[in-house]
Image 1 (cartoon, one colour):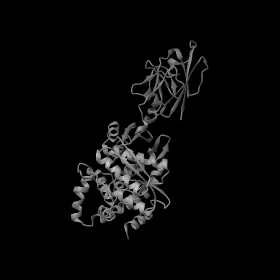
Image 2 (cartoon, rainbow, N blue to C red):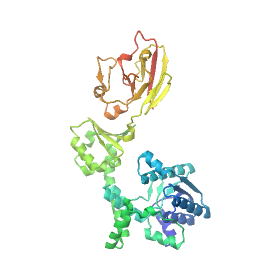
Image 3 (spheres, rainbow, N blue to C red):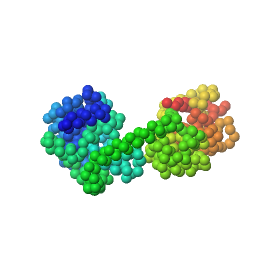
Image 4 (cartoon, rainbow, N blue to C red):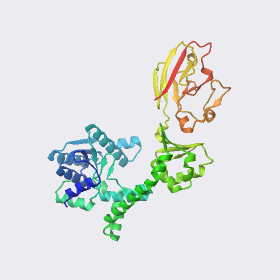
Length: 443
């Protein structure tokens, strides 16, 4: 069976695409992606090429682009090229060059796919990439999920060359006289993946000449074990985790029976990337540290009195919004504030509305999250009260109070816990001549 027939067979076996689908090929100019482009063109699939010029290797980057453009022109394939200022992006976002290039290319690929209405994005990773990924994940302790390696299909991205070894790709580009360019950074062992490929895998091959085939079988076993495990875990996870408007909540009494089983706990929380060490801390804090927050790379988890609350980290924001004397509408997080000035002194009991004595205000007003030490004089109550105590009395969790708008006067006084309570000092009185009315609506 020739390589084109093997490609078609793999695509059908893994259900990567339909014959009529439009495929966006990501082509760097290296041997892997150039072979993929050659095979897809020979197969007669509906394709276009996307090429990223990261402007990191001077003239080499320009030569890569020229090669891909020539291939597309010679074969009558539409091509789209984007030149990125990768170094600036990495610096502005405080990430590595590799991570910056990854974010830039995948974001652009998806934007291009949507704009041009392509069905799939094809990436030219092969079997050796697959194996390297598993070994890399093994060294990082990602667990059974990471030992599945590279998935042939994930979301809209397909990897149709995963059935080919690197040595086979080398053979076929020579066989078909396919022009390509090597990226010299692929030969530097300062990168972990390259070190695995150049320094580690050759030792495995000395022990076992059929290393790739055997390791591919092991990856299949890992994947099957993971699927089997999920068949057990998923029903429990679906029962425990309830989605809310801003995250997830788990009732403590529902989780109690699984609490002491750390391996199961790890799998239940795997979607949120909490490590076993963090979950072990959760076990220790369970009955005695209400209010404690546990963190993964992307999520915060609050251990409250009766529930666990999970939120994406970016949900908690320190952004502030300003209300000037001219403001009519302003947004803060998921809230929209409408402001208006009048002489209407009628009192309202609507919790979404605050009517403030205009002459006591110092503009601009600020809308922000609460801060430790905040206090106010709640309307209808005696004396000053800390916001933290007010929240406790109202049984408001830490995650909830982080997202309650606090309207602050220009002199630092708190005017309104939006949708909860005004400050007594700024209410309408018989001496009030002008009123600022604030209406707070949640989107």
